[in-house]
Image (tube, rainbow, N blue to C red; front, side):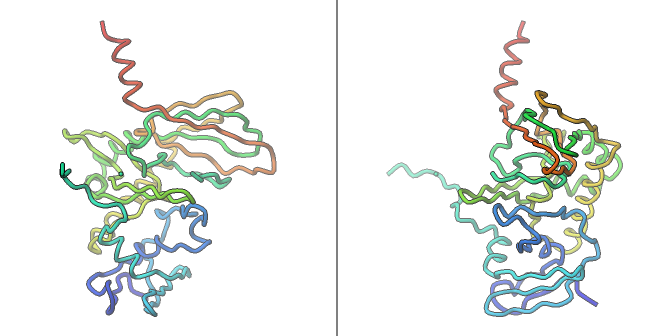
Length: 287
């Protein structure tokens, strides 16, 4: 039988225990991630909870792994070590001394928020339907605040871990690499809902203890089910000329799969910052 946790007895990773799902999410072959932007081609929340590592070996600083679901791949040990230790090419902030997208796909897009790797995350999103003539491509919205509230009252253990653990969101293309760390559900200083970041194809969970990782993955999977459930989702179809406008910090959006061979489809997106709209609203409502 395979192992859920493996230890590497050589090199930089000798002090760490590596979790099967944690490694599986980092496979970067063409069948797992888009080779243009390294965005996952699958939903990690749908991986088997009982995924195991069938075999592994290290050869010249490369960790080779085969998983129980048939997936296999290789990892550079230095890259894993740098990620675990949060080693980035961007230097840490220091006190001054006086004497620095490619997201198009015809595949289904499950409920997600946009640009979780941005600082700050874009606030209000507009999607202008230029054309929607193809088969499929229907839109949906989910209220992340309602999902978070449901978790808080019905799954407090899941809610706790989702509001306490930072994950890394990362976007890569030919010009840039954008990275930020945040919680899937962010609370304000009064522990009230502030923001949701949920984009399973872009998030990377830190290497936690096995029990904590299992709990987090179970919580994320449960959250994924809620976010894609008809209990929280509204469905609609955008027609030519229509504009959908929504709060990207609160609402998740998605789209069904469409067939580009059946007609032209183009939605043009843009963003408006929260402070601009809130500032204007305060001015307009001020007596």
